[in-house]
Structures are given as structure tokens and as C-alpha cells.
Picture 1 (cartoon, rainbow, N blue to C red):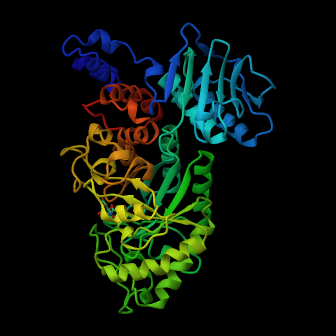
Picture 2 (cartoon, rainbow, N blue to C red):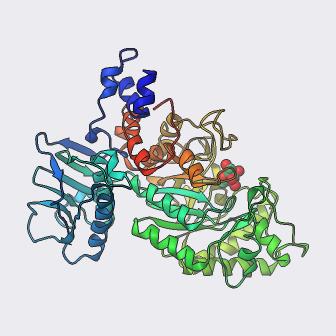
Length: 525
Ligand code: NAG
């Protein structure tokens, strides 16, 4: 078994365990999981059409809904992924009218109404592969499933030998929650545009549709603000551990936003306030009650900074920042942070939020905030993001009672920066260790007492970066837990089952290897 593991990788271990083969695992472990049983997140419904596989060949054509530039863009994206590893031309052109009789088609007509605005239908036979959806976003989700129906080497950056067989199938799929998110903290350690784009591509594969960027914290301010230029040039000049830091120019932030949009991912900018603000206060003395700028900080303490609640300049500053970032952000949300305001009294916190909440609305955005924001009187459009380690929250309950929906990120389940176990080389452990099974085994729709599924907007996986420096560090903490969270956000709860999940998750490993993604090799999978 040990030799097999070493030779084949972890992908096959789960298969052996599922079959209940504790000792004589070899024959089972030799068989790769059939692709229709290896999709993450698992679709709502998958039916095999036996004896009717589609062969992707040098002659295959991709057709997209005539007249839809968005469908064409999804077709080009699909062709880009498949051309790289197959070496085939895969030309993309308008679909003929009527039901296509060959090739791979991406159509915006004829989908089952259950697909809604994010789902899709996929029908593959020996003649053709037809994806149908009501939106380009739905087609894009279907494309992610289609990738997983081909062998993992389809993800290779170099041309590989086929055969490239798509199993005959009828798939109907749509999400449990409309919001599936990931957060990247670019403040503690700055992560350049290329790293963020790489992460966006990884998120898209698992049908995550929101990227929350934590753009400012005590240790760094990471986005250019024209009316307060020192925020970026001085406040962004260092990071945890004392390295050089960095920041996004407005053009670079827009580049991220546009790249994310091309993957149907909405960027949610966060400027944390009224705490976690040392970088801003170090940049401008007037943002401090004593008019003295503190030094830049490169340690990882939390809870010591606060904007000066009683000064008018504080609100000019906050309004300028919200206005400039909102103007660059097409998505509907602005995240105000609001966590760990230990250096702000509750009364001051409420005073502050009462001033700032209307600024977000005036900038045309809806508020998101870490769940402490529920201490303020929120409009029903505001979304608290639960990050606690217990299963009740007064702040969330208050907000839900006023009509809010919540994003679920319980720290002991959803935090990607927690270590897997005591020997994980990077990560924190204040919320506990989170092995893959822990990341998977919770129900976001029935987790917080008094918060029914109907009050849950979705699931988000935060990745704080006190210990995360390189893209390889991101890979290691996000994979394989991020796909576990993605499945919680997408798949019906009725499909929830660790034993089948770990087989499907293990079957992703060859894709990650082909992509050069340095995932954590969990002994549980
Ligand atoms: C919390 C802080 C965050 C920190 C993280 C590390 C939240 C909402 N706040 O203390 O600034 O990076 O833990 O896990 O998580």
C-alpha cells in the first residue's frame, strides 16, 4: 500500500478506503475513479449514458450561441484550456440554428428552468457535447464541469497524448447558495497581480464566484487612493516581517477586477475600519486623536488601532476612500471590516458606523462586514460575515432579525490560514487545527442557532496571510480545503457524504499536479 501510495499519489487512496479494503487495497487502488463520480462540487444530478462517449479530436469544433459575445468569450476560454494540452485547433464559431449534431456547443437556449441564473445542463453523446444555460455565467460553470470529465492531464501546460474521452452523460446542475466566496488578505503580506490572477483561476474551477480582497490592515495599505496618496506610497511600504510590501495602482486593481469578471467572479473590496487601521494612521498624523502618526507595524498583533471617532477629518478620509474604490468596483458590495475593534468603545463603534453606513449606500454599494458590524443598526441590505468559533452570534441574529442575510466563514471550519495539524509548516492555530474532513463536515445552512438556510447568502473561505508569503503557500493552505468549502456552497446538502467526497476530492489530485498546484497531501483523502 505504501509503495502504491508513493507511485500513484494520494488520488487513489480514498477509493481503496471507500471500498472498505483495509489490507488488500491494490486492485481497487489501481482503478482511477470514473470521471462522472469525480466531479467537485458534486452536481445536483448526474446520469451516465453508457456506450455513448464523446471523443475530443483534432477535428472537434466549438460552437457558441449566435449573437452572444459573452457566450463566445466562454467558448474562447474553453478552447484556451483545451488547446494547451491537446494541441488541437478547436476553432470557435457561431452555433447553427437548431440542435447541433457535432462538436461542443455552448447555448443560451433550451435549458431546464431549474438551472436558474448560475446553473447549466450538460449532455454528452458520441456525436456531440451540448451545454445549455440561461446566462454566460451558467455556461462558464458547465465548462468547469466539462474540464473535470476529461483526464487530469487536460490541465497540463504542455501538449499531452490523448485519447481525450468525455463520458456520455446527462447532467443537471445549479447552486445551493448564490454566493460562494474566497478572501485573500493582501495586507499582511502583499500579493502581486499575477498571484491574484492565478488564485482567481483556481477559484473559478470550483465554481466560486466572489473574491473578497482584504486591502488594508495594520501592516499595510494596498491600493492607490488619489486624494490620500501616502496611504499606498508610505502605508504600503512594508508588511509582516518587515519586507518591502507593495500596493495596487488603480489600473492594477482594475486589471484584477476585469480578470475576475472574465471568470464570472465578483471582486469585493475590503477596507477594515475603525480598527486594523495602523497603516493609514501611520501615513497621516491627522487620522490620530493625538495628531501623532504611529510607526509602521510589521508584527502580527491585533486589536490596538482605531480611527479617531470624534474627528471630522476621519469621515472625510473614509468617504474619500469608499468613493474612490467604489468607483473602480463594478460589483454590488463594499466590505467595511469592522472586526476586533477592541480599541474602540461600543458606543464609539456605533457612532462611527452610523456615519459610515450611509457613505457606502451613497457610493452605490451594499455593506458587508465581519459579524461585529451587527452591533450597529444595519439596513436589511447589509451582510454580516460570521467568523466566530461558536454556533451562536447575537450580532448575526440581530442583523438577520432586521432582514439581513449572512455569509458563513466560521473560523474553526472555513479559515484557510489555520494549520491542518500540529506539524503543518505554515498557518496559525488560534481557531484550532482544520483537517480536510473538519473543513467539509459542517452545514452552512444550519450552523448558527436561529439562522435558517433562507437567511444564509453563502459560504466564504478567508485566507489571512500573516504566514503566507508565496503562491506555493497559498496553494498549500487552500488545497484541498477550498474545494471542500466550494462543495458546501454549491452542492445540495442531500449529497453531503465524507466518504464519497474524499474519493472525488482525491481524484482532483492529477489535475492539481498537471497545473503545478502544490496542494497539501492529507492522509485523510
Ligand atoms: C483574526 C482577525 C484577522 C487575522 C485572523 C488570523 C478576523 C475577522 N480578524 O484575529 O485580522 O488575520 O484572525 O486568523 O479574522
